[in-house]
Image 1 (cartoon, rainbow, N blue to C red):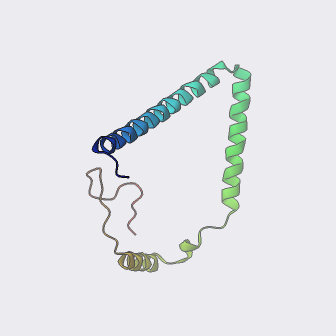
Image 2: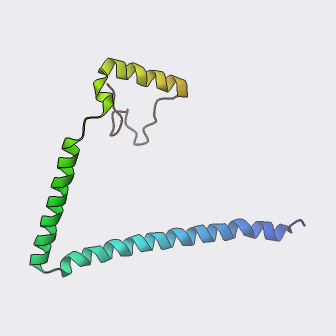
Image 3: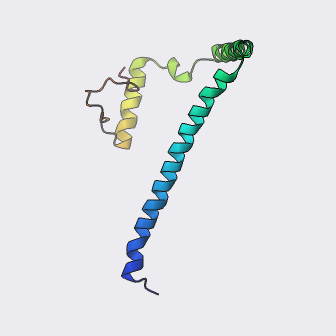
Amino acid sequence: MVPSPYQVATIPAMKRLAVFSFLLLSLLGSVASAWAQQGYWRDLPPDERRQMRQQMREHWQQEREIRRDEPPPRWRDIPPEDRRRLRDDMREQRGFQEPHDFRGGGGGGRGWRRD
């Protein structure tokens, strides 16, 4: 069965409406969640706030100690010149092009490291 031209034209509009509705609900849900969390901290008595902050500090300290005990990544064992050569070889194999900086800068931005 071949759909009529009227049915074909309404399908993309329905998809657009569904996607738009989903995005709007997601946005409203995240805004409501952030707004609700802000009120939670204000509702706590000062003693409970102090206790929670102390627990958070202890947790972060434990995480730092765990990270400190871990061995450093193995790529650090390779000298920088060899790392650069390996990275260049991998880029050539993948056909990698220089990354485009969408912020308008000339490279050197966050996350882009030149050895």
